[in-house]
Image (cartoon, rainbow, N blue to C red):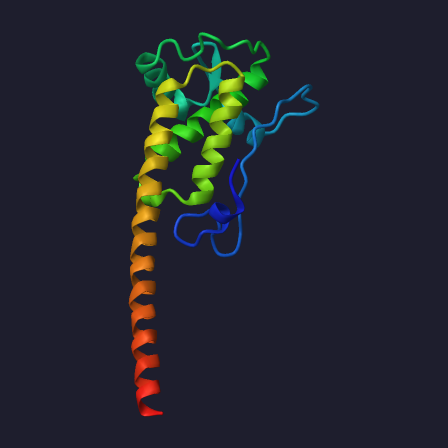
Length: 175
């Protein structure tokens, strides 16, 4: 799940020279013919199991460390279908990636999507109290930043109001 704003972002999106490349994992039901390309691709896409989750080789270390830090993460998980399990795990990995960024680099849209994703993954049975706390901390930091910006805007409005009153007084004096 990638918001359109993140997809098109010039400084960190997925657009390169006006193109987006999408890599998809395809399950093969039956092989009709053989190809050198197919054999090379299957080696690259070979997956491994970590705590009952099928993950790509590039994800193994991160997923292992996630389960080591939070051994009860799947204590309430009731999903048996391996495709559903990996879908939810990928959502969880995306959440942890988003929250590993500094709060000022997380957009409001990303923050809203993170809350939705957390709810989605938690309802599946993942125990994510620690992640919910991190997300709340980021949200509170964002709220403080917005309140500071609002305070500055209010101050500028007060200053403008005083200038308008001064201008009105000057106009009355001149007329």
